[in-house]
Length: 217
Image 1 (cartoon, one colour):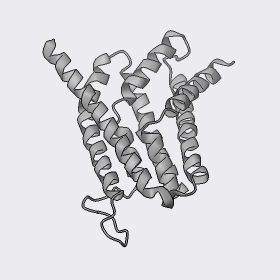
Image 2 (tube, helix red, strand yellow):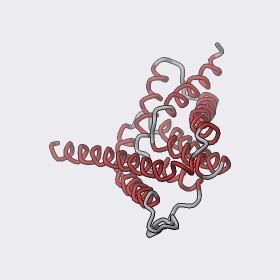
Image 3 (cartoon, helix red, strand yellow):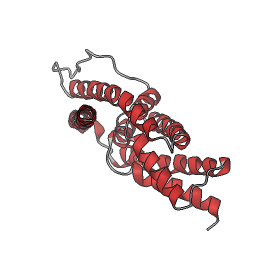
Image 4 (cartoon, one colour):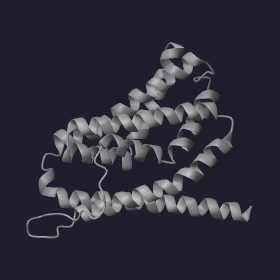
């Protein structure tokens, strides 16, 4: 395989496989496709991938500076926790009917734009940085990823295609496989709330772990 094709394929494969495990981004894309529209889900995916590509480019610049990732994570984790808790609360509220007419609680404002929701969720995901810093080093150590503009361009292009394909599977499932969303909307909102709450608790654990580590040092 041509070395440039190998670079692009490596980025595609890593990002595609990284998008498959269940997480806030792909499950939210699934939910948007099922509950709103295909166009909204696509805009969500575009925003997620756009932020991811920016993060990859930044990690390539800071590949030799581990403090870059650590400092960014320290800033992102608290904001990520707040956003996930917010989404958890709004999802739980959406799953609760307050009258026989089926109207739902709207105490908190909703993030109506799928694009900005994807942008925020992706930008405040502190796992992006360690994930891509690790893979950048692995691919560089194996001689696949070279320090050149053409190499970086093909690598980032492959990552973008791979991430879109991975999230696209969840969008396809939400739009064309899960066809009875209205019948299960209360249950799906409850599950989404539990998912967001679970990830926020996980980020809290990471934050406390980091703070305890700093104190012991």
